Image 1 (cartoon, one colour):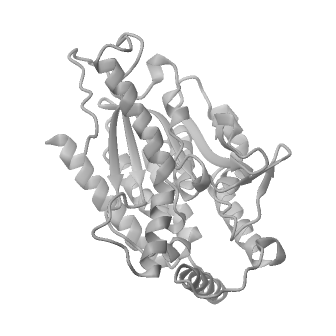
Image 2: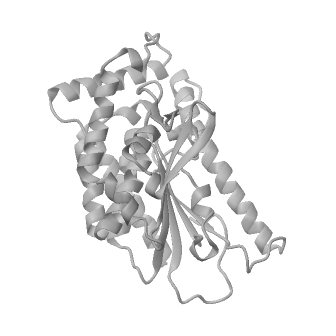
Image 3: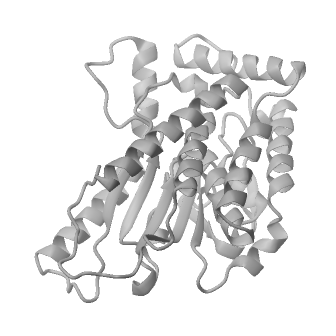
Length: 333
C-alpha cells in the first residue's frame, strides 16, 4: 500500500514516527472509527510512535477521540471513546429515526436531480437541534477544558481542519486551540448547518479545505516529523467505467471533490521525497515520509453520508476493522 519507497539505508533502532490523517465524510467516517479501534488494539509502542493525528468533519471526531483517549488514559480508553461517540451519534428513538430518514431521502433526491425546495439551515430549527446533539455527544466524552493541560511537549500534534468563510482560506486548529466550537465548525456542512463563529469569523465544514489536514502534521520539528503518514480515506480514489446516469455522475463528483485537497498535499510530500532522494534537498535536514492509504474500498451512495442508522454505522465500523487488519497484516509480510 506504500506510495513512495522511502526506506533509509541506515538502521534506526527507535520506533517509527507515525502521523494519522482522518478524511471527512459524514457518517462514512464511522469507517475510520473501525480502523482506529483496530490499529489501537494492535499498536506496538516499541515499533511505532504516534506524533500527530488530524481530521476534518467526522474525521475530526475520530482524531480527537483517539488523541484525547491516549493522553487521558491509554489505548483502551481511546477505543472506548471512539465507540461511545459513534454509538451516541447513531439514531436513537422514533423521532430521531424519522428525522434521519427525512434527511437521507432529501439528500438522495437532490443528488438524483429532483427539484427540492432550497431552504437555508438558518430558517429551520432542525439543523440547530442536530448541532446541539453533536455538541452534547462530544462533551459527554471529551472534557475540552482539559485539552490545554494535555498538550505536553512530547504529546502528538492534534489538528482539526475548517474553512474560514469570511477570509476564504483554509484554517486549522491545533492542540490547545481545539475547542468544541472548532470541531463543530469542522462538521458544519453548509446545506445542513449554520456556520460556526470563532474569533469573529464564520467557519464551515473542513471538507471544503484540507480533507484531511496534512500540512500541519508535516511541519513539525525534524525530531517529530512523521516518517510514515497513514491516511484513512473514505472517499473512493478509483472508479470502474464511465459514470453515465445523473445520480452516479453526482456521486462521483462528490467523491472527487472530497479528494482534491488530499491528493494535492500528498503529491507535494512525494515531490519532497523525490528531491531528497535525488539530492536536491539535503537528507540530513529533510525527512522522507512514506505514505500509506487505508481505503474504504467500497462505494456507497453520497446520500448515506448523512445516514445515522445504527445498522449502517455498525457495518461501516466493521468494514474499517477489516481494512485495518488487512493493512496491518500486509506490513508484517
